[in-house]
Image 1 (cartoon, one colour):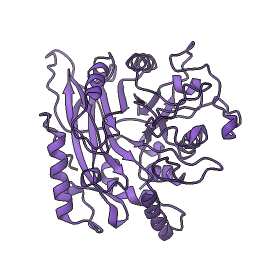
Image 2 (image 1 turned 90 degrees about the vertical axis):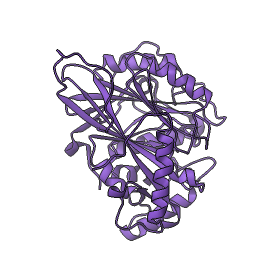
Image 3 (image 1 turned 180 degrees about the vertical axis):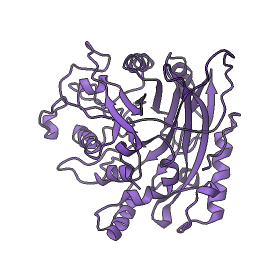
Image 4 (image 1 turned 30 degrees about the horizontal axis):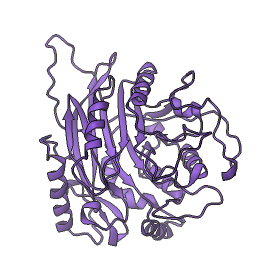
Length: 407
């Protein structure tokens, strides 16, 4: 069930930061690419949204004289969304019943109890959509159906991170089309951009009077290169850049900063050496409150590093990858608390393990017993039980003691 930003009280805003020549900005010129047949775009940018809840108490000591928190927000973060050809076919079949060409919302619908229960829900759209004149294709070079963005909105998400190794699969045409589609359905986005000005402005989601920043970066682009005239089109992981963007977000009023990183080794539960290095460097950045990881296509551990929660990898939310552990996924629900006149801190993290029912229409099923839909499709309770156990063993393999989210 789609919850529009208005009723939920979440507003997406891009801060119109006035920056000199930024680290990632080639100036404020709109994105254009003659080879992709793009015309000049205006520099006006849309708005965004924010907030959230979870369930593991923080251990940091607080002063006995400090006033108690009077603000609490809850956030949910979902794993990779990939438009493999069989996933697209399932969306076509689901759409036929609703009179639509595609219905990706139906595939994500079983997650509605979780998404509807938080203040801010954010996904990770790993694959761009097809732009004008481009055919829809799946792996290895994704040009997804534009309707996938509509489905994300229908599922109740408020926005997505978009920086990934597939960001440039459809060139600048697909990158621009993806962000235009997000704007058209009222979703926020971060990680790719249509202009230097857009790239330099942090994405803020306002939940009530609480601004929350979401930043997104990737390790690379599968051999594609950023265009010389658009080096700002997608964000690469750079700790100095992340620190600068965090300062900009804080200066713009952000009271919580979330950094999404597309990183790691595929199909490996244990974080690799580069992830470990980046995790320690990014958590050391002043102002970063939470790190959310993507890319491995399997669930990875959650760990608290020097007081900052790091979710190394959420695995897949929606994909056609057949391996059992790639059908396992994770949504995390995070609670942040603080005073109305100061920054928020992440106090609780809870887990919602998920399972992709590949043979039952690629529906994303929460495996927590109280959250499971009555109709499991082709999945069995045994499938979901086994998936839940596998996922939680990985999640808590570093002693985080993250509990299951329950409504």
